Image (tube, rainbow, N blue to C red; front, side):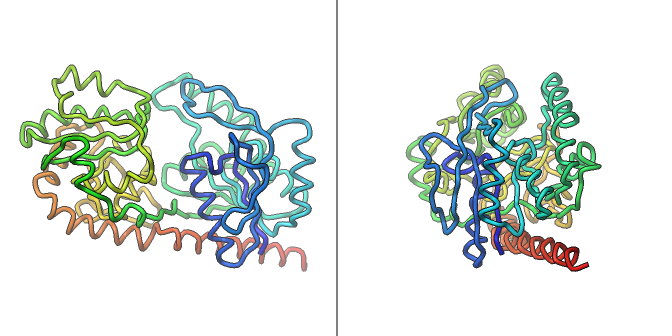
Length: 401
């Protein structure tokens, strides 16, 4: 099978969408399929290269400026010649199926129009909901962009859409209901074993943690993951376990949690080293007694799944039915906390920190097993390939009629 993978975001650019599309593409190639990756230029990355058995073509892009709710640079390839260039590249490759990533990228739109014109089945993985719950103005702008730009384009070629969680399912049915060419429930795939084998002593010595209970909170601090609830829970945690440290690992782009910590008198319990090399994340996981950063009811991301997959107990605010067909069980797979209830969150944190080995052996073990069974990259790749096989077989049946 010839599979064209399309995503404006792709390594060396970092990010969940870039990582997942790269991992899936390499897995398709490893399974014996011919893979072409179409993406946008990024920094000094070559215009063409072979990566993991896949041919990568990067189309020159320009970058939109960073705005309030858009805290990362987005490269767009849009120009008068784009459609001709995409058509030429894909005609030469002759894809059997196109796997697109990201509904608001111009390469998705161009390859979608190509798919409609050539009768090629397209599968679209939507990684980001165009929403900004804490900024009403941006929410309005995003909703208008969905209604006036994204939805009309998707309706033109009606791709099958990958549903990664219940929030995405609700978003798709609200924003793109008439553009749905089919739905596939496939969760995000992770490779948690890379987090194993970290050096616990290295991090505890670096940050002078000693034998203190440690709450690890992985990921950049942004308005949607502001750590405010964690800081509000700290006084109650410190009352029971006064030596506890909150270790926030990631760039601090929104420092309201530190200001609140000063007001509550708990700033001494917070260690925020900023972003660290990916190679050091296993050391931080090994040094922690638990991981906690998902504190808003808007989903459950890769970092949390990877921590679970590494056997680290996770405390999170997440719906038990967050992933269609998969139940997240409280105190079996992870520790669930209610939204906006810092007392209940603190109690969950205390429960783990007071008995870390017990939590790791029980909940950590079951959480790791769940990730291996349902979220491993091997399982997710198989689901994608099954969908591709179904799409291409239906295309053949249509042609034979």
